[in-house]
Length: 293
Image 1 (cartoon, rainbow, N blue to C red):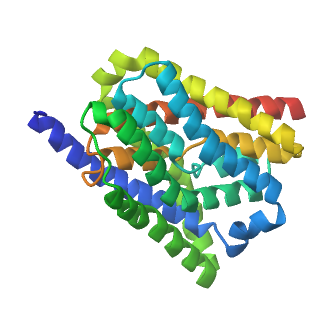
Image 2 (image 1 turned 90 degrees about the vertical axis):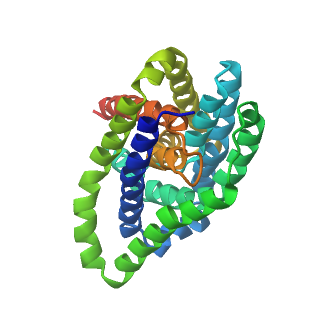
Image 3 (image 1 turned 30 degrees about the horizontal axis):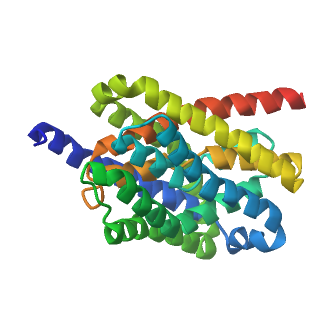
């Protein structure tokens, strides 16, 4: 039986993570227009390449790495969970700093946020039935779909509507909220890091290795996809960033939600990934900037 204190902390944290996720998705919606979803018809090769790397390559890599390192079933589910999430909202800023294709970045983030509403439950249902049966964990798919619709799709659509009918208001709101996105994610990761510090410390070596190998391997394979497709430099930089940068807030929300897994331990890989992706991708941005100078 879990201690009462732990249950209290988990229930309190969900009142933090869900509003933060909803806020991030609303902020994303404020920056979107219909043309961002239609870019696939104009630049299909780049969009399909980016989505393939993020929606297919990353989850498969995560599952293989978890098996290779013999991760605990909880962490196997957790690392695949972060890999199944859409691109992070900060990827647009990283792409701009790296002199990448910001329009492509926005479109990939928008499309992945919508597509993963459906692909994430399907992939996680398979992974949970495979790894979770050892510890008696099942995935309530209907609850997951409903939570994603409320905390992701609805805020995105609301933001898009405001952008369409009140563009100036949307711009002003987005300017304020965009400054809060990264600090909010770090606050969220910090809260869960403190909450599960003992578990993280006990498993840091293997989990740190797992998320680092996942991130670096995904980046290298994303670069390979771009090379095979003959994409331009700006497109390559954007896709590398998009594949590497995931929406950790969504993974944490799913892990800790009382309607889904209701266990913050599933969020630990996402917490470590959130920290590592910012370090690695900031180094990547610094590298490409130096190359350009």
